[in-house]
Length: 90
Image (tube, rainbow, N blue to C red):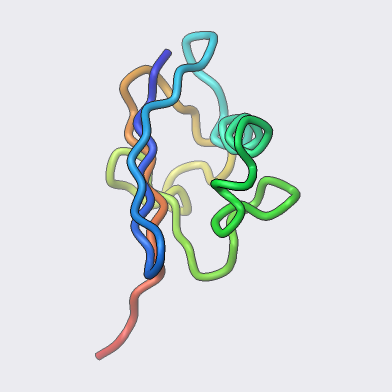
């Protein structure tokens, strides 16, 4: 399965396609795979426990994972995962 991973942040802009085995997997497993494969690249976004660094949100196909199933959200072929900085203001 292939998924697109993008990062939009104050110091990082990245778009990459990641190939994985199997038809689907939880987001948490994808994050572990990313960290094991090239942890240095993802160091600003992923914590050592494969959690998300403070100040970032994760979107799967445009929806915040907090409104889905959090880190247990199933990732499937063709999904788009976006890491973006938290924006607020008024």
